[in-house]
Image (cartoon, rainbow, N blue to C red; front, side):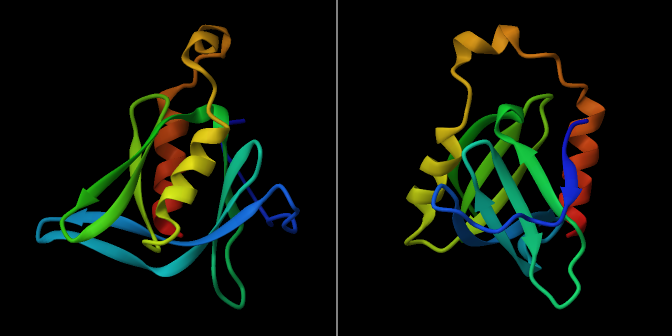
Length: 137
C-alpha cells in the first residue's frame, strides 16, 4: 500500500523531529495551515503527526516515493517543496534555523536516479490520495 496512517513510533537516535506547517495556496495567496505538525525523518520515511490531545493517525511517507526535495520561497514563507512520484507536490514550512538540516535529512533517504528504473510504478491516484490526507491533518 502507498502511504500508511498509524501512530508514530518513538524517536530513536536515527530519527530527527521537526516542527513544520503545511502551506496552502488560496486565491488570496499562500497561508500556513494550523495545527503545527510534528515531522519525524527516519532512515526510510517521513512521518507527519498533528499536535493535539487526540490527534488523527500519522501520515507515513516512504522515502522511495519522494522524487525531489527543494527549498523554494513562497510569498513571504521560506518553504520546502516535496515532489512525489506521480507529479503531486506539497509545501512545508520549518523553522529557518532547521531548514537546511530538514532538507538534507529528506534528501538522505532518496533513491539515486539510476536505481529508479527498478522501483515499481506508483499509481498517481495513491499519491493524490495521500496528499489530500496530509492536507486534512
